[in-house]
Length: 52
Image 1 (spheres, rainbow, N blue to C red):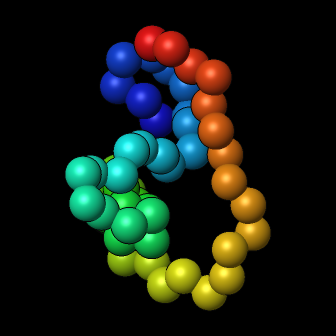
Image 2 (image 1 turned 120 degrees about the horizontal axis):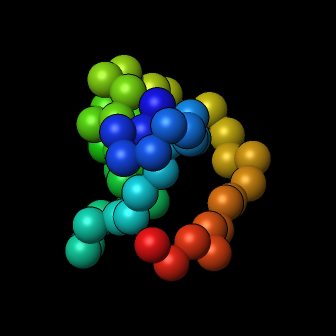
């Protein structure tokens, strides 16, 4: 649940400079949901058009 607007959203974020996408995904999931994940396979990418 977002803090700024009352919507449930998927976990997401940007990679930090020099950070690969797998590391970024694991970090964002840990930061936003407080869980550790294991990447089993890549199933797709989501690119938001949001310009907020």
